[in-house]
Amino acid sequence: MLEKVGIIVAFLISLTVLTINSLTIVEKVRNLKNGTSKKKKRIRKRLRPKRQRQRIRR
Image: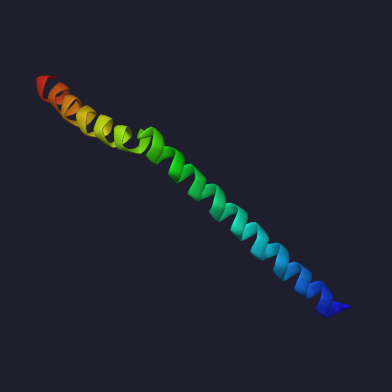
């Protein structure tokens, strides 16, 4: 009985890990298709110099 329970628990853990990994992969693929990840990086780079300029003016 205990052995069966251990095997079932191991299967459940592996299944949960696989589902989490698949979800993360799906999100990455969607970001690549939409190009959101690249846009976010570009926007961040553009905002930083503006903030620095405002500080210098003050």
